[in-house]
Image 1 (cartoon, rainbow, N blue to C red):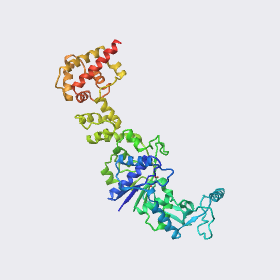
Image 2: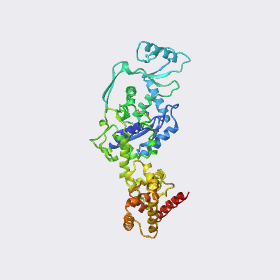
Image 3: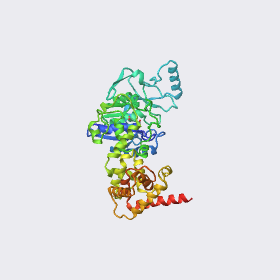
Image 4: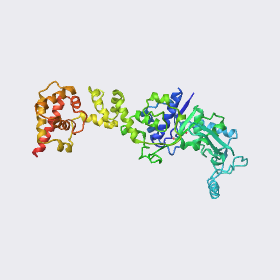
Length: 467
Ligand code: GLU
């Protein structure tokens, strides 16, 4: 049974690097009919906030990765951690250390002077005398004193750490009894039965410490996958400006979770030259052992491309649901399908899709002056007026084809070309000279409203002419 987890520390929002490891963990568990757990690592009371936890849960909900069980909170598990600390003390695998802050500074300074790695020197490891008074001790674990800690990482292959280089008897509980980061991660991963830990490779240096804890308590060591970072196109660490922003910012900008998830799965993993992955395909094909060994580069254009792909291809009902969250409720609108089919090919984001749809649905509040200057003159003004007069006598124009036939015969009759009319009509209907196919737009807007909008433009221009 594969059990994975996503274990964010609520020190800020959920960013795309975090979401990517969450996605990989989710896919790997679900592909194997296993469990995917969500654990909030909120033991650092000073740096954590409820807001951040809320933001993470909200983002999680938005992308639709469902976790199993309830959400685990480390802050509610202190009793469990204490029990294991006691066990380690009882078994003489951990001990109280009374070294003061000054003594520690002195030790580290000396090591620095000697150009050595700063590390605890084990002075209380086998201490049996009377403890110094006035010092609240921390608790340290007995790490191996020499040799190597090694494990086979699913991405990096065999990883070896020399004990001398990376370990000392590190602190597992502060003097107030509160447990430390690596300790609680290891305890939780073990107790929650996590078989596969998929996380950013910025955590690689924590792994030997966590292995020390597993071994001390006789827990099975999980399989680790340390995922290389996401870099910006210049090969540097991804910054906020490059896109390392709150996942919910992507929502605000009009990205679909489908697109973001597809983008993230490919950012560091691939299957042949396939770019578009449905959730089912990801579940079928994803394997963390195939994650790239080297860092991957963030590419915003690709995300936009994927987003337009999903806008073009998702079922209309899904677009209607999404648009509701962006303030446009088309659920009761009769011509929603026609409208969305018309604009979806041109929109790269849901914000653009919404704005295009609205530009057709709502009468323009103002007209693009550049377009007015370019396309409206005495001649076109007259044509428009005549066109509208004839439209008013019509009763049955409905489909795009109806409007097209009507317009063509109007043009023929008057010896005109479409270009004399199309742009002025567009300006009247949507306020500018850019819109999808003008006959489709007319059909969606509907005859009565078309007449009204052309009338509005005429009134507006007449007023303008007379002032
Ligand atoms: N809480 C850690 C973080 O947010 C992740 C710990 C882990 O995955 O082991 O970076």
